[in-house]
Image (cartoon, rainbow, N blue to C red; front, side, top):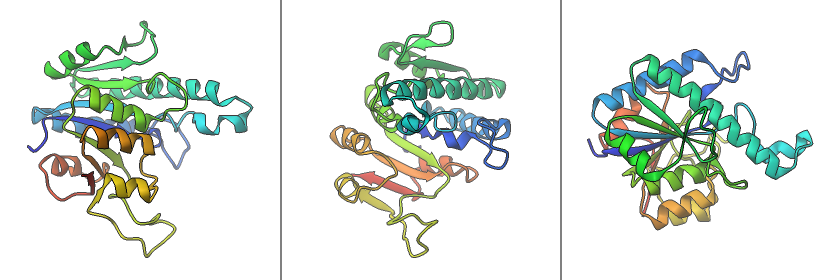
Length: 236
């Protein structure tokens, strides 16, 4: 395998049922857990950052009469809900998992301590990082880039429902084309919305490649980890 330690970023919306409107879909959670079980069977160390947009999004909180700072903290709590749901799904399929949070909540999860996180990974446990960075005004993309840097991940892979980064939104623009490779600087210059600028910049500074791919295509993540040309790779 090309990579031995990965940081997987999943959006909160990836966990929901878009037909019923349910925030968490048990079938989706099980499918994700089964995919990650295959990855762990290949002796790859896995860390995860999951968003909270299926429950609450701090960026739009002011529309609900909540100020942005409070809204961001509410969004962090939503990521913890998703982290616990994903942990439960993983442990149901026999994958040992730990949830670590940036905001102390010892009744639910361990506090994030870098050395402890590394130890969990070395022991073969999947580690889910909840509550973002613990600070308002930072997205879970930034949290993923930060944690990937801290644990010295070989790659940050972003699992979406789209098979890579396009020149425009492929749903709105049928002429949009997919990049196989793109540099960090070009991604920043073109203001591509797949990740925020802070996340791109942090990965660029620490030379962590970003791969964007369709996580829900069967075994696509295995192909990514083998180094096959899947999705879009952002690198130097």
